[in-house]
Length: 257
Ligand SMILES: NC(=O)c1ccc[n+]([C@@H]2O[C@H](COP(=O)([O-])OP(=O)(O)OC[C@H]3O[C@@H](n4cnc5c(N)ncnc54)[C@H](OP(=O)(O)O)[C@@H]3O)[C@@H](O)[C@H]2O)c1
Image (cartoon, rainbow, N blue to C red; front, top):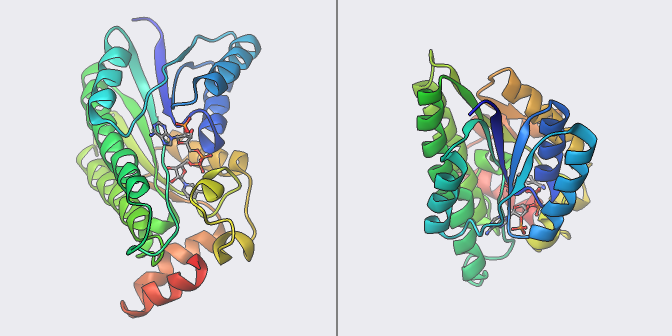
């Protein structure tokens, strides 16, 4: 029980790899979770050699709630987990009427259900163990409905709402929950979500995953409740508050087509 562990989901690509590098640089022992085992094994080998830390790879499909519960039992059985990064997530760009339903369902299961299970288990575990930090990855999508990406935006609105409410419940305890809200970022997300062609990724500057992850990491270390990365994204996050409600999805649609 001596060492403290960091669990990172979605650790095979994009932000997850960057979070793993940041955690490793602090000498943290890591548990990496995603489906692509080979990519995580390669990352684990590099991080073990560079930082002399323990890294365990636990391949799992987080779209299955029973798998998520089993994963947590395995992770927390004999370990003190003092940092959980719920980063795994996916989206789909296309009209709701015709969108790939399986993929939309998978995004609800991973973005909402798996994140909720792991957040709930982690909060209880950390309160019992005397402290810890949780970093949940939402998106600027959380701040507005997203025509052509309706399900994804709804999942991220859930992540933000859950995070802010639980963070308030945790006030005065040694456990913090930070919700990170990045905007469009250079990872595999846009290709996987079939949205490389949309204005959000084509017309606006897109930062690197490393830069965004670092900013989220600092916010988590400071115990911030919500972190929106970048000035333009901050505008996206506050703009809807000052815009007539029926106009917000119309404006969002311009960026999502
Ligand atoms: N990039 C952006 O523009 C952007 C903006 C705002 C928010 N975000 C959010 O950032 C988070 C990370 O995304 P990213 O940009 O780094 O995209 P990414 O490069 O596509 O990485 C997504 C990660 O999620 C994992 N994942 C997806 N489905 C999974 C499943 N069923 N089970 C387990 N793991 C699964 C993937 O691993 P496997 O494929 O190996 O399973 C991968 O490691 C997501 O929550 C996303 O919504 C991204």
